[in-house]
Image (cartoon, rainbow, N blue to C red; front, side):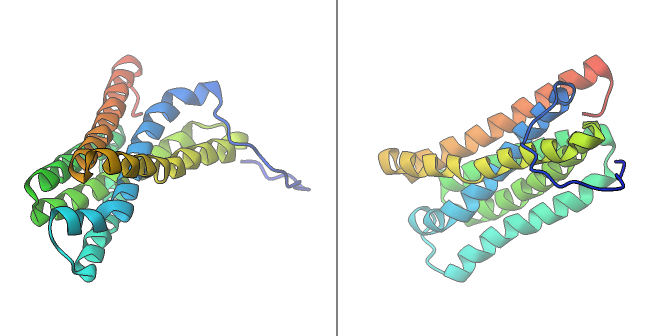
Length: 209
């Protein structure tokens, strides 16, 4: 971006130019799914550990949640080694596989599958977040990058908060097992939707995202 001689600070509202929508939509869907995973583990993992898996150790619960963030760091680090066209789809794939592990963990009361699902989903979230952020930044006009990036973060922070509130309401009505499995399935479906949009875009335009 060009740097003016006399910069003027101003508040810029989040917005997405029409020419960026083709990149922004799949990236934001994957980002929404990934941050919803973070909301799931940070808010509901203690209840899952206690009510479904029967573990009361708070350190163990913290370690499970910590593993999701470690997975995210690993995913963010490894996605740069993949071809550009494979980065966001790989993140979506990690989210789908991770949610399959979480569903298995809840259905079978398995700590092993909860840990594996959390690590894999965390890696998928990290890869999807970094790839999506990079893609929309590269596609945005230089003078509007802050607006587009802010829009992406609005999606992310809505995802980490509001869906998990709905999960709590659903758990109160139908039970934690049904709510947890339904939530994980929703996240996997969103990740799959993002991947399908990406594949369709790649076939049509022959571009990475």
